[in-house]
Image (cartoon, rainbow, N blue to C red; front, side):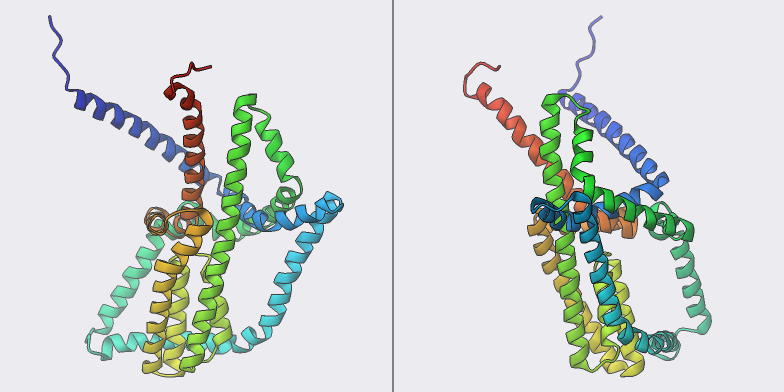
Length: 360
């Protein structure tokens, strides 16, 4: 009996689909494992980001004869000193206006709710209450805030343990990072060891560039919003600028929250007109930051096209909320660096064959 002839296109599609299912299952298993191990995964990621900033000055000191332990402790102490100095410099201004900021937020929120009832929308109080309850329910059910990585992060015990673990990991990553990576690569055969070392160095460089680029974008955001608030005449410029700076490290969500707080404060302290001006200014700044500054700065830092940056941020936010947006660009950059290196090495290995020479 003659077997029925199979369509070649169908065979290719079936093979591709099978591989795609296997890759998807493996990815899901890895993500599940990472979520379950969030108490380890998050501190490792944060420690890696911080180490990319602290390791270069520590190595600079070590090259000038400083013992590794002394260089690491000096750099860590300098980092803590800079953060403490900024805190003590800004704390008096922030704390003096914190009460006004809190009362302004409450009053602004109440005015916004009253406008929904008394304004042109002509909603009833029961409708407003129902919408608020529905939003609160969706917020509680949102996977971006209540499941996976962030669900454990809101537990105070895990937060404290994670902070302590992060500090310890930063110390050892800065002091013994190269030795730890060398020990890891030594577990592999000699041919693979060289490739792993080169790929690891490229990933490390890319992560450092990403962290520095993110800090630069957040700083520019904070300065621009501070200038806009000063020109409009809104109070609480310093705390709102600081909030904007730290919000810059949480793509998409951080900027929205900081902008909403600034608009509510302007609504209470200066009135609806200035609140609209603040909202418009923040919208323009965020558009420039999100569509121009962030893609260009991060794209140049991690060598990704601005369109890839935008798509990665959007996809990460859709798939995993805040955590996804935070990790989307470094993960994409890491995958791109590794893929580019693998492609280059494969091209090198195939070059003798394509030129007609005999393969070794």
